[in-house]
Each structure stands twice: as structure tokens, then as C-alpha cells.
Amino acid sequence: MRGVNRLVLTAFAASRRAIQPTAGVRIQGSLMARAFSSSEQHYTIGLTGSGGLVGKAVLNEIRQRETLQGKPIRVICLVRGDKAEAPTGGDTLVWNPTGAAADDVLHPQAVAEMDAIVHLSGENVSTGLGPLGFLGIRPWTDQKKAEIVNSRVETTTALSKAVAAAADNKNKPKTFLVASGVGVYGDKFIGDSLEAADESANVDGVDGFLAHVSREWEGATEEAVKSGKHRVVNMRFGVVMSKKGGALQKLYPVFLLGGGGRIGGGQQYFSFISARDIARAILHTLETPSLEGPVNFCAPHPCTNLEFTKALGSVLRRPTILPFPGFAVNLLFGEMGEEMLLGGVRVVPSKLLDSGFEFLHPTINSALQSAMDEDI
View 1 (cartoon, rainbow, N blue to C red):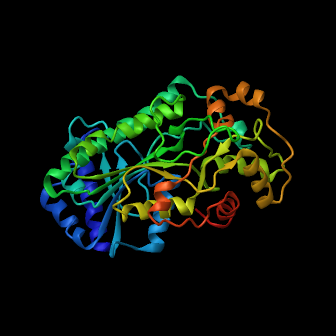
View 2 (cartoon, helix red, strand yellow; view 1 turned 30 degrees about the vertical axis):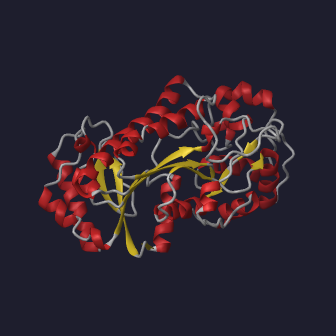
View 3 (cartoon, one colour; view 1 turned 90 degrees about the vertical axis):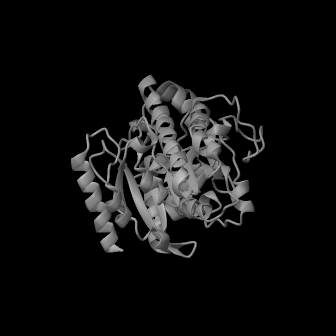
């Protein structure tokens, strides 16, 4: 295993010296063939976003689990050529999401040796992290919104193109998992005005920037879907509960100092998932052929902002008596605050539950406790 890792990394280093910075990976066929010679003995996953919150959780889960479909799991971390640092936790290959042709995006032989590609990368939808949580977040600018859209749509379109082209050779990768978000359902789930949504809900024409982003993101898988040779899954993520990143990382210091409280009226719904469960759900999806199309990755019991606030205060043993008024949210954060802080999303994971997946942390209390106890 280690010998194979060194060979792939050697090929990667040689390709970096041999190509222009904006070109795709160019590795000689014989060397690539030897580098992937053990692919039939392993379940090989191409992973983007391996340095992000969910990517790290997936790598952590793989280290604990080790096998998938009876084979040792092998991870190929796909990194862009313009990134200075490569992630740890697997082999590394450079890819180029701006490539005009499929083989300019990622070497087709490399793609054809992967059993699955899990695409997690994308610009963070929040904008900054300060020492006091919310005080480090700024409203969306037009530039930020463009980065959020383009980082998802362009990269997914490029990978979809590469996946569709690779299938002509070995009918691999068989599975293409792409991140999306529960924001696709809109932000109008306030109180009991709307029942919880599942994957059968019609999301066409739903208002809101995040709904627009998610629809464009999911639509970018079109080439892989049309090829008919792949199982494509749009993973609609809820808010991931982890001290290592995301919303909880921003809220944690505020609540720890006793400055937490409900946001606005507190009746806006909140769909969440623990970092452990999202990693487990991704591996479960890889080995469950019945799961395809949109799949909600969120706990089965969404909560309101008020319930979340009380739960976090309880876990941290801190008071939660300082509300954040809605008018202040609108004044400070504009559209971003309206959608992400005052808006509500109430979603249930019908497909995951029907497929037999069991959540370790189905409630907000258990998800928050996991976030405090686990180092992921």
C-alpha cells in the first residue's frame, strides 16, 4: 500500500514539473497504469474538498472503518493546481476545473480507475470568522455571491464532464456524489406554517439566493446524469455540527462566554447533522445503490432556533438570555442574515431512513454533545 502511495506521489510530482500551471494532469500511461495497478483490490474514492470540514470528517471515518464493499478503501485527494498545499490522508492528484476538454480537467485513466468521486469543495457561504463569532461575519457582496456560485457550478460541471468521458473506457466511476444544500427548499419554514419537506418536494422556482445556488449546483451534474452510466447523488447537506468549522465554530465562543440567545423570534427551523453522521452517511450512500438523485443529509428531527439555543446552552452549561433581535440581523447582515439567520429550513432525510441508515445523533442535543466530545 505504501509503495503504491509513493508511486502515485512520484507521478504527481513529475507531472507538476512537466506541465504548465493551468494544464490538466499529464502522467504517462505506463506510469499511471502501474500507479493504479492495485485498483481492483481496493475501493478507490476520488475526493475533492478533503481539507474542509466534511472532507476531514470523511477521512476520519475512513481511517476508522478501513473497508467498503469488502475492499480496503483507497482515497485519491483531488487538489487544484493553484492550491499551495496538498491535503493529507490519501494520495494526491492535481485537477483543473477550468479545462476546456474532459482530459484537461483530470487524466481520464485516473478517473476510470476510481470507483467513486465525492465532490465536496466550494466557497464558504459565510464570510469571515472573528473571535466573537457573529462579529466576524459580513453581509454578502456581489463578488462573494459570484464566488459562491462559480466555485460550485464550474467545478461540478468540469468533474461531470470528466466522469462522463471516463465511462467510455471502463464504465467507471460508477458513483458520483456531489454536495448540495438544504437551502434548495427555501427559507420559509417558520413555526408550524409549513410541514417538513423531503426529497419529493418540488424545488423549482423556490425563492432565495441559497435555493438558486443549490439548483444550479445540482444542475451542473447534467453530463454525468445524461451518460446513463453513473449513479449520481446530490447530497443536500444540513448544517454540520462541529467545533472545527461551520456555524457552530462561530457560535461556540459566544455561547461559552454567556452571550448566547435566540435569533429573531426563534421559531425558524434548523436542519442539522453531526459531523460523525454526515461522514457515515456518505460512506453508506457509496455502498447503497438504491440511493440516487437528491438525498437529504440531515438529522430526522429538525429543531427551531430557540430549541437549538437552549440545547447549546445546556451542553455548555451557560445561560442563553441575550436575544439577537431580527432588526439588528437585517441591519448588520442584510440578505445573508435574512436567509441564514432569520430564515428557516425544516427538512427530513426520508431516503436515508428508507435505505436503512441509522443516525447516531438524531436530535440536536445528541448532535451538539457529539460536537463537544469528538475531535472532528
